[in-house]
Length: 223
Image 1 (tube, rainbow, N blue to C red):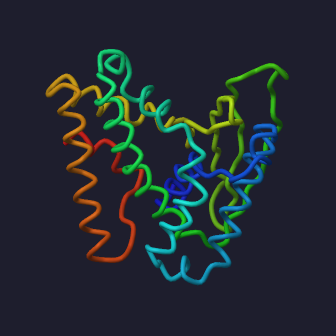
Image 2: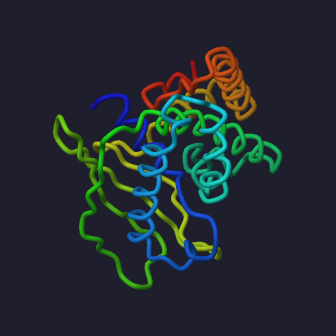
C-alpha cells in the first residue's frame, strides 16, 4: 500500500465534526460523514492542494483536535506503564503523542486526490459503548484498502481512538516502540524521545512548509 493510503487512514482516526450533531450520530454514520468531509475539504481547498501547511494546520485545529480521545489512545499505546505514570507525566505523554499524530494526518490531508470510500455493514448492539466500524478506500489503480475504526461512547458522544490499516492497529504499531523506550529509559525517557521527534519534525516543517510524518515511521519514535 502506498504512503498516501497509510497517511490518509491514520489521519482519519482523528477527524470528526464540531457541534452537537456529532454527539447524536451513530458511530457508523459519523465515520461516513467524517470520511466524506475530509475528502471534500481536501479536494476543493486550493491552499491545501498546494501544500500550504498553515491552512492544513488550521483545518486540523478546528475540525480534528477537539474530537478525538487522545488520552485513551495514549494510555493504550503506553500500556501497563501508564498506571505508574504521574498526572504530569500522563499530561506530557498525551500532549507529545498528540503532536506526533498531528504531523501524520496533516501530511495525509495534503495528498488527497481522487480516492473514495465504501462503507461496510455495521454490526453492533444498541447498547454497545465500544465498537468497530469497517470501511475501505477505493482508488483508481490498485485494490481497495480495508480500514477499521474503533470508537468509544463518551458523555460528549462517540470518539475515535484507534484505526486498523491492513490488519495493523495504530495503537499496536506504537506500543512496541513505546515499551522499548520505557524499558530502557522509563516514562521520562519516552517523553524525551517524543519531544525530540516532534522538535525535529517541527524544524523540518518550518524549513519546507510541508508536513513530513508518515505512519511508516512510527517505530522511529524510540530510536
